[in-house]
Image (cartoon, rainbow, N blue to C red; front, side, top):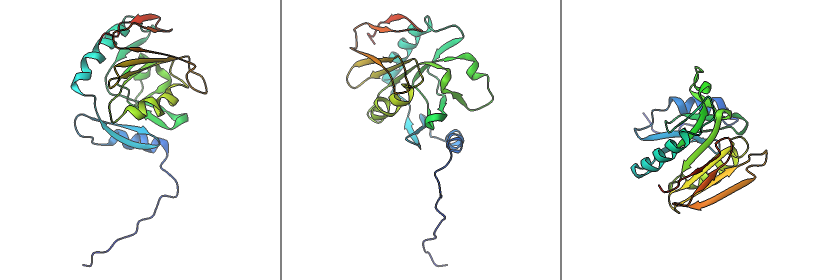
Length: 190
């Protein structure tokens, strides 16, 4: 048998958004990794480092008593779909409508989110500050970027078709006002 390169038919168009979502859900990612759709591609990245657990838990606990009726705060890895942007993200922390998880599908509707929190890492910082900011800024009422490298938390709010209209950044340890629908002051001493 002669070894030689075998041409394959190139895709005439990129895979459809729903196909990418299905592929991401069916992937057998290694333990400790998650698959997201970033910039139209499936990106596999590690879950947050162990030292992120405490800040995630403390933030979730503070949020829990302020979530809107019919919602809950969690850190479980679920993929939320954003069809108009053809993206699917698995936020580190989120507040979502409970009914979004009553569907049979594998991906929750991004419109069910009232808050997303992303904890930056060296590998995810660019996507958290750029791509996700753009997508969340058109739909999600509150987006928290917990910058673990710079020890700051930024609260983006007031979404619009062009992205968030407002933002506040504080250093860890300073109080941070979380606007409606939460309306409380977050203790950032994490």
